[in-house]
Image (cartoon, rainbow over all chains, first blue to last red):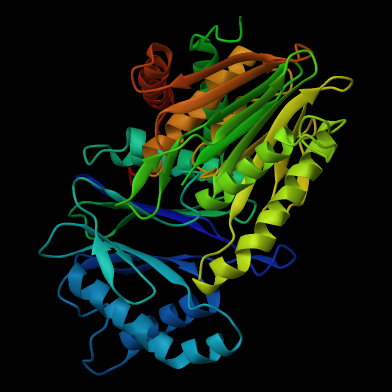
Length: 245
Length: 245
């Protein structure tokens, strides 16, 4: 399984992913699911992937081949805006589908892939897209400033309650880490290390990109203190007296 | 969809269910999913149901027919303990399967049913079971004092963080209502009114059984204050400073 969350704020973008993959509980590995494509001053793109690892790795490899190709075919380096970048990623995913879907089907394997594409290209504001296995996609709007892929449910309530477009980058990082913590506690197939990427609006470069493991002091503090804070909030709330007949 | 949670404590049992059913988003109704079978001083049983409403209603009707039958065939009135009660419910569900599964399959409808059976029968302690569509079941142990059926994920983190076997009945009610609130906020197909049942250990009768709608003062207070408490806990937690290059 996987959990990734991408957040679009007035201040910029926050992307967080776990790194656990499993083919059955007896076959668990760690793979990066957060990919960064950056050209200083021109564009910074972040692609997070969930679903069948063979499919999503093929997708990323093909995107990289296209970027390395000498000719002028569309690639993430030359698309003029984020909408075209999402179309390009979707088209490339459809190419993976044309190559592999039939063979996978013969083995009863579903063609599963779910993507978050975030970033900014010079000339427009930062944008956030959720791309589906069929290569179609939706874009985040002010009403819904975030997308999740993978195991999204455990970590959704806290995001819905605290996240706004006006939230600061650092607060959004805190929110994403709490959301990830709730998910990790409830789903063994979501695990450390985490990949975090922060993009500040109009910086046109990666503001921060860090790997967070169990030893990370801030994440450890969040895990401990959030649990305590929840238990305290719970205790502070009055009980009903309904069990008294 | 549905969300039901059953909690087994040293102090007794707490069962909470929503009442929304939907066949597509354009066909939403309210049906009770919490059924109580009580004989003062002898036994109190609570059965909560999720899944295909036609299946779970058939199950409950057949259980009631068996209880009303004059003869001595097994029924929830004469089973000697909760384990036998769970077996009886599972067997009856298998009878529904024998009747309906093939016809449902012809229409591409899955035989979906998930049950929580909670209660106490004189001579043993309160017990809690989770019964599957195949009629097999598992029982709650001290390590896992609760079961959820239906839309379980949104409401799971808070239960995992605060619930213990030693939790009081009133605190468990509070926990269940917070868990339900998180679920209702995230899944439109889970909705009010709620059905709540409380059984005190060795009372051998229903301690409290109430319907909770939007006007309920305690539930309204929980919904408002829990959101505020979460936001305050979130604000009180230090931010990282990772976005500062």
